[in-house]
Image 1: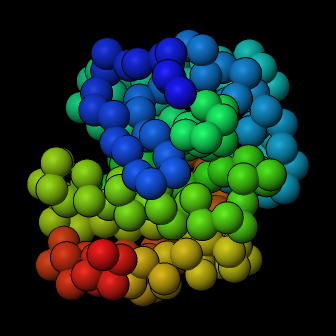
Image 2: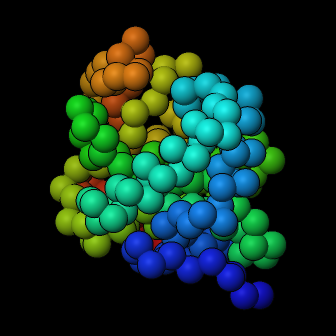
Image 3: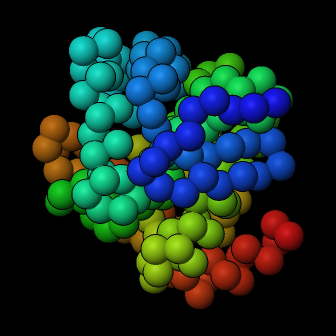
Length: 188
């Protein structure tokens, strides 16, 4: 199958079942579906309208252009459909450099988040040279906490996020590059 949307912004990563690439305009409908998915957005800022999603998509693309990294669009290889966004991010005022994740509800529970997070953490450590990776997780978000733990991360501290999320206190899960390299051996 041919995936018709290559991105000029950055690298494309490939796993057994997924393509991870910087977002392109053709991903807009997928982003809209994600931001309208009540379950998926429970701990990710709530639902957003298409005009807001348009800005979110362009913010992620802009981080690739300005910072050299950003969240990847996650494409299911077998179907070519957009199923979520996962990858490195570090907004201004964030607790540290993060690899975060979010998938459409229909794509959850299949191991896709773990598969894409592993590739993204490899990219952050080996491609970007990060020496620390965090995951900011709402204390009530048990599926994300379980994923962070499965990746070898642990709660380092709690932190308050910057605006517009300043009312949220999150658990900051994380691990160093050296810890990731050791934990990564479990997934070979």
